[in-house]
Amino acid sequence: MKLSGQATVFNANNFNVEFEVPKSEELQQTRLALLSGDGSKLILANDNDVAIWSVSGKALIGKTQFMGVQQFAKISALAISDDNDKLIVGMSDGAINMATLSTRLNNRFKPHTRPVTHISFLDNEKYWSASQDGKLAYRVFASAEPITEQEFAHRITSLVLGHDSNNMFVSDALKTQLVKPLTGQGAAIQLQYMARFMVFRQAYFINHADLLATSSSKNHLSLWDTQTGEELGTWQSQVETPTATILSMFSNDKGELLTINSDAMLEKWDLTQLNTL
Image 1 (cartoon, rainbow, N blue to C red):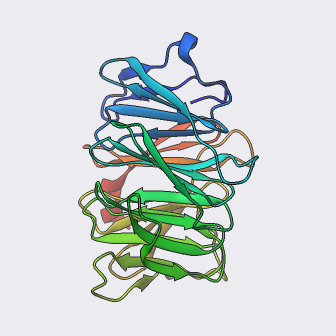
Image 2: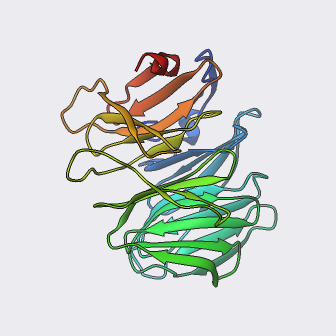
């Protein structure tokens, strides 16, 4: 995806182009991109507009505008449910929009005091939200009351759920990086590293393995054992500019971890080589 609005969906196993947004339908000044869990929907957002495309149908499904409670609030986070019917749009003023695509109904409330940084659906009805205000909350869709809520000492920079929905990873901006069981049973695992502190940005649970991949604010990629919190290794990604950072990660069926950075560079990491560490 480029800032102009150009977006392309690739097959992660063979890199064939599955869909490319036609130039006539590009969403200008695109800031966020999201692919649904089944790969059938592409969602793009700029400051206040969200556009949804069908990848298989290669067509624009619809476009709508989302606002915060404050006048100049911008879209800061996106999530779509597994059934592709519920869309959550987080805003820079701490507001959350909860839209049902089939009925076009939208509920908005403001549970956070700072920008919403991460939203993740657990299933079709429940979701987690995290914010720069340090609050992590678990809610039922369309309800303002949290099922559970936790406050961290610093702003939350990472939040991701495991593919099996058993674990989650959450990190604040200083010293708390936890692999937590979603069921509430079992102890949380704190990541272990030698540095005084580390900044975590993107995170990804590797499919069918007790592994967590994380990226730093720069161009570092780290792998962790989710059972012990042990750091297995840290590597540098290829960049063209000194400030480039990894924006997204995905593992394919070949045992490869794919990363793309802010220089639009795609890299493949062979996870099978971890046996040699």
